[in-house]
Length: 314
Image (cartoon, rainbow, N blue to C red; front, top):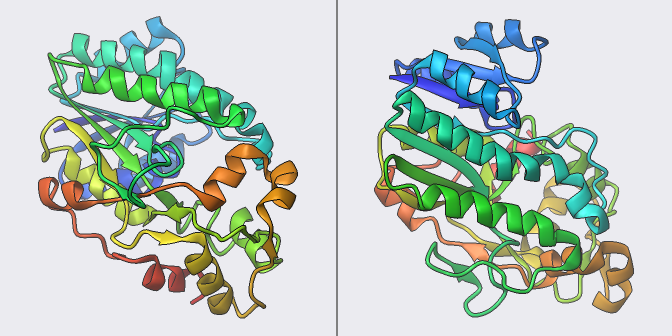
């Protein structure tokens, strides 16, 4: 099949391109400029440039590609501050791509006659912070987000509503968990791992926020499988071991050979983290991946972060 991959040089796009090529597909991969053309060709893709916010350009580029499947992996996190109090500011460019970018790409996919559309989303902090500690795809998203993440959650909701509301194309939303592995913040040379090594990420309050992780290669494989499998709908693409911060963070400290993480009362951390950061550390919910495993036939190589994190230190 002909696969149009919007965002072929991003965290998922980098490992996804060679997987799609190995599966026998023709991949047309986009970036914002020509700097990545040689890299995309080396990975087996046909490079094209596209501004996802330019409707006319998106319609023209996608139309010329004549894809069978369109995959939306566009994001814009370059220059992120990492300050959770500025969460919406850091995600402003990505949110534009979740809003207008999703609409443009979905329209272009329809006009080009594509049969399938796959869009990236996120699970974890966007979930309602009520009920069970682990939610499946039927659970609602947060109705009371922190002020720092209000616009980002609205953009996520828009993407999911636009994709799941499509009736003339098979459309899937893949809600990824927290990425780790090459090219992510939680990699051997990643910013987040550097913070953890320096004991700058504490356990806040009781550390009850439940996180769901996924190795970047496993996330890419689930995306490749979604090209030909799975009914339209939403899928949690996470490992099978959701865990509270109070469990996974000390474990990672031990793997790194550093002293246990600091512990900070919630009231003291809030001015530093903001309400959004406090929610992530104390009350976010994990994700159940049963649907992705059964519908997509996905078997992650790293079913638990407990083993997967060892790849960060080997």
